[in-house]
Amino acid sequence: MNRWLSPLPINTMATIGILRIIIGAMLVYHGGEVFSTVQIKEYAQWDIFKNTSYPLLMPYIGKSSELLCGILLLFGLFTRVAAILLICSMCYITFKIGKGIIWYGDQHPFMFVLFGVLFFFAGPGNWSIDHFLFKPNSKQALYK
Image 1: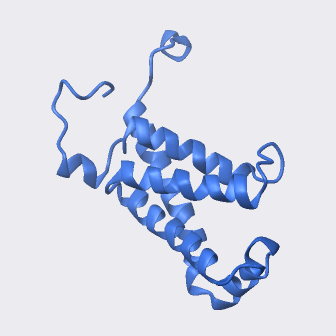
Image 2 (image 1 turned 90 degrees about the horizontal axis):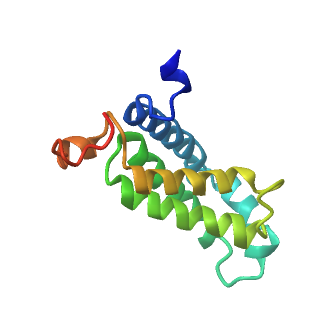
């Protein structure tokens, strides 16, 4: 019982790893719309894109970045690079496209921003390719 009430972390790296995998899968799902011409053309009709020189370009860039971030996070490969890309993409969606209404309309993109911040600072957690490529030594591992 004391463990549950303690302020000390419980299985932090495993929890971060599970969250990373779930968030990565969600981003792959949403980024997969890059392959739907119909969906991209629908996004291109939004007012923010309609009046630009290349209305299809931004939806393709956005969905491609979601897909790339999702794949990298899903496998835990270059997690911090993926986190930076995720933060930038979702901040654009939240504050430029959505006008920053984070308490109502743009909750989901803003939550992805927050998860990006978590993965940037906490790393990939357990079960990641980064863990095998850049083997942390025992002094670097804060939480086991």
